[in-house]
Image (cartoon, rainbow, N blue to C red; front, side):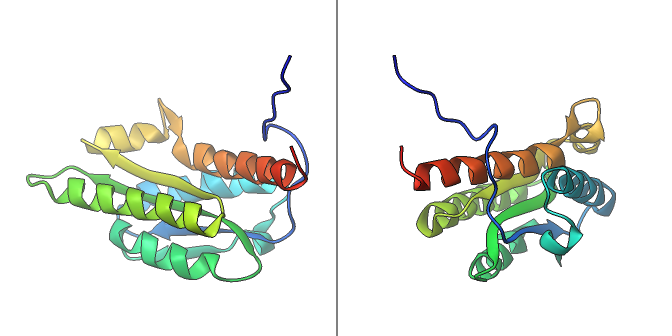
Length: 159
């Protein structure tokens, strides 16, 4: 019988979990940030250990996450934003570029980076995912980072 290893419990590393969040679609993004901060605080990453860095829009998330994770005290990052489909395919290009670059950064730097970028067809979908009927993806993104940090600690200790 094999042993299952998860990040659902365990120790968390010292350091900071940086939140990089878009200013675009402010009501949506502010709600995502508040939820992420609440989840991080529940895990012990208080305001001093969970800085919020604001960027103009979703396109800028990757650039700033890259700069943030190079800081030695940063153990993880949570990228938050919201792109809502318009009349063109502009949203698809932004969503694809940001998602791929964040994943690649996490892999290359061996640091958890949460993808909390809402990629919605309508404003209603965005509202529902930022505290409405579908919950708040800020909680989910921060929760994923917490789980990955715990899992990373266990893997680093040897499996």
